Image (tube, rainbow, N blue to C red; front, side, top):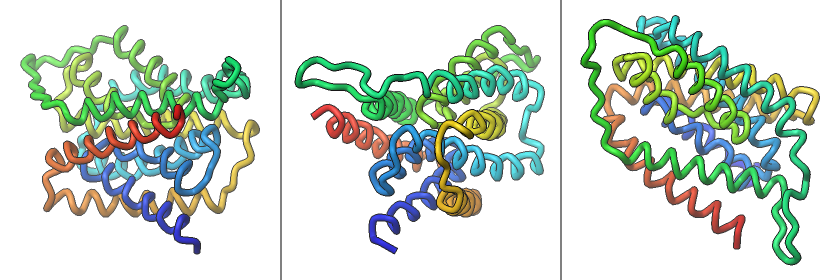
Length: 264
């Protein structure tokens, strides 16, 4: 195996491990690993990422379900508009983007370039979310779901997920805390269920639109699933909150690297 491929598959383990340790964030690295270490085209990488992220999150969901940590009612309410949005984005919007988006003499923005720039912007938002100190407290013991805002948030996150192939846990978790009044641990667990559902259904929108290398994809996803199991185990010994802040700086640096690479 070439060294570059080896680094890419090690990256798959890291993605799953971080997801298991922090409850989110690891998936944001899937597309850069696929594009820059394994030479997958950006549009295909976002499709592969949906399958990898969805499969890995499903493992975490099963573990959280066994512990009774998932709020199924709010999860389904959030997931339905989200997976409809991500499916339509992958099936209709992404294929309709022209190969050359902007052509101004010497400055050309291609479809692949646009995807990576937009992805870098999402990574910047994710890194800021990880680096911020968030003291979340649920003051009202009577759970009240703000359904209109949950549905709107689901549609928006589904659109973003469809465009960049990331799980969006850094957006989903605060939404569940604010709009569904969930404790943070239940919000993290429910977020993984939502990510699993919408990512896997979103991936279905790509079937028929792209050629899928199943052997490669299943190998990468399998390694990422092993990683999340490892991360869940290591969570007993490592402070996930401290790790998340360090990982946030790494995501920020990666986002800046992508912007410089694509624009310069």
